[in-house]
Amino acid sequence: MSRDTLSDLLGTVRLRGAVFYYVSCWRDWAAEAPPACEIADAVLPGAEHVMEFHVVARGGGWAAVSGCAPVRLEAGDIVVFPHGDGHVMSSAPHVRPERREAAWVFATRHEPKPMPIAYHHGVSTPGSTEPNDDADTVLVCGFLGCDLRPFNPLVAALPRLLHLPAARAGGWVSRVIDQAAQESAERRPGANAVLEKLAETMFVDTARRYLDSLPEDATGWLAGLRDRYVGRALALLHAFPDRPWTIDELGHQVGLSRSALHERFMQFLAQPPMHYLANWRIQLGSRLLRETNRTVASIALDVGYDSEAAFSRAFKRLVGTPPATWRRTVASA
Image (cartoon, rainbow, N blue to C red):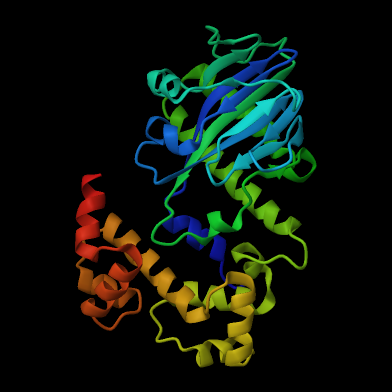
């Protein structure tokens, strides 16, 4: 690919992160986390979609989400729940979990973060700002927020439970954990911003390594990035959304007939190329509406529409409201 399409998308969906908890665990332990949508306003206010992640700093355990087989975790592993599912972390699959109620998360949202928690026949919050040195297992837990609407094909392309073993994560995980511990303990100015960027970097790298691990016959947006033809077409659409693209011109640019390109997009993305382009244009337009004071007419031209009216019709069709109304709504949120 001549363009970093993944970075393009991540730049428009407002990815942001937060490291929230250090969890120290002894012997038999289990913790049940509620669905992220129930606690989103407490952990990442304003985020449309929230994902939870855990990094195993020491020891090991299991991660489970309803409907999926439990996954064994070792030191240095990362597990992410991209769709915000409630889930259970435990020392063994059979241990009955202690539920972390949404009300407790809201009640403690203003406590200094990351907050230490201990699981050992109940839940407590020790006074130390660091994990207990004698704990069998230590988890670093946090959240990632992003926009789903108007268009975010990445989240849909990820599994409900995304596991990155330490062997594929690389040595940076231990450095992230150490850096998070240091920032938390020292409470220096800018510590929260550093922790947020560490969480975001962790997610991006996890998504990249998941892409690298996909089987040859995989489909979806991430698999499409890897395909010689679809990946090149996506790069062109992301690089030049304002061009008057046709499927014939796009097929010519990537070396496929219009029918072959259509078939390949349907195979990987389950939508035609021009449908994808329309979605991407609206996503770009929504970012400009949110982040700038530019007129709707100028934004329409920038993202490939020949008039404000055409952009407004397309925006309302995908989002449900006209662009000016949507801008006022997000500005007051």
